Length: 223
Image (cartoon, rainbow, N blue to C red; front, side, top):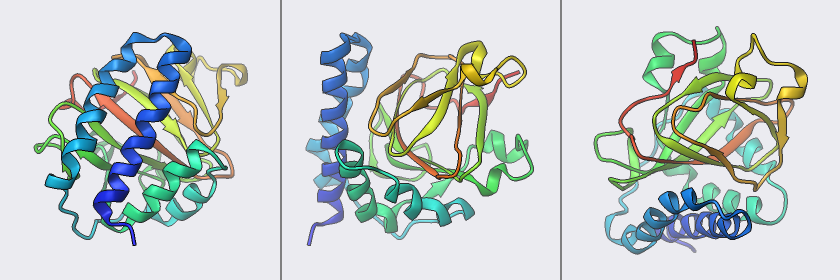
């Protein structure tokens, strides 16, 4: 039986493989910001991994369905590793959204868990001072509205969802054509302070994310 530490290393290795392939295909030098810390995580996880039973939120009722939505291939490999880690994941919410939820139902359909991150951040399975690596979970028919943050960010969605960025992400300005359906296993790159948004349809969404740069400043909703 695979250990939680081995499952963590497997998820990190699969994420690195996806990003390395993306960097080779696109020539995006910014992906190096994320690749180097991930390599470090695979070397240090066995020494620092100390899982406890994780805290859960209402949105966690959708986690199994979101992981089941991952098709074969890269997304399915990531989902398999996350299933092994699920009992240990601590799901939390951005305090800015808890103080002022964007909609009445948002907090029941949104949460995230940190796999690796700084010690002074949200509870993480592995300490990592220079990167935040985790999983975003959204329920079905949920819009994560336009928001921004100073950290550079990558997403690898495990299921289908619509994504928008820049002026297209602002609900008041967006049309149906501004949203782009992104497929499982793709890489979505948001540079620092770029406004972006996500919405789901019938299927809940699990998406792995990476932050680099300013890890201390939480995302804020766009004006």
